[in-house]
Length: 293
Image 1 (tube, rainbow, N blue to C red):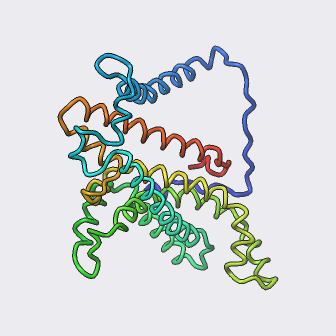
Image 2 (cartoon, one colour):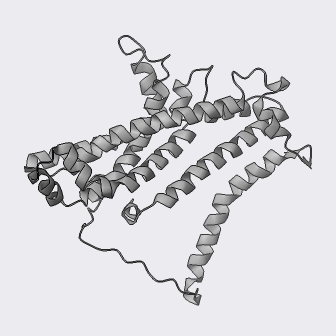
Image 3 (cartoon, helix red, strand yellow):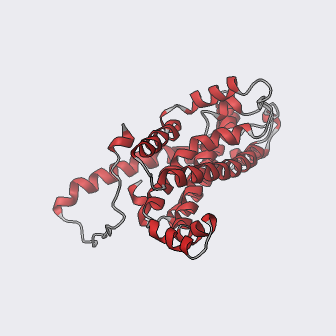
């Protein structure tokens, strides 16, 4: 339904940015709504930061020092810093998988259809590739867990399983980022390159790559941020001895003791800060064509 209702933008239309002006009385409702939204977004993060810095009613960095492990946290399989390294490594693998798979899908969906039936097939495929957006990540992870548990696809102990699941979660976002950009490339440019003797890959590099490389970098940032904080599928698939940071935070919250709770707060702040850095980098790479997303 979403695919049928989604309007395909006309690549020939040019966007114009409204000129800024001083706030007027008519802008008060929008300003109040914006301020309320900022408070709602910032309040949970501020609570995490304050809670991670308060120990026995005083300001302290004790919870952050405990991220490297401590006597009361020896029962954890790895220190929090080790879980962060695992999350970063897994997010890198999930990002290139999502880019590879999502990029191929975007190319297939944006090529010109030669018949009505081919157009319908592409439309159906577009909907199928978007299913991970509608299916809960928990359901996806549970499906992986019960499907890839017997030869020849027994991947339960494989380090590839978690990045693969996270890549499928991030893949629809990559596709939705790249499809509008590739659809806006004039097919006559590819035809001109082909008429000059360029092969399919050379024609794509000549016509598509100069337009798509910035959205591709932005899509990689989005995929990395999603993978870094993914918990639903990872909670089913992560090995107990090598958890990601979101999984370890969940385990810390479930442990008794003020140190475990405070360390979970500090780890959450570290995760939020790392994700914020990635998102800010993505914002630097935004292009007008991503505004439709």
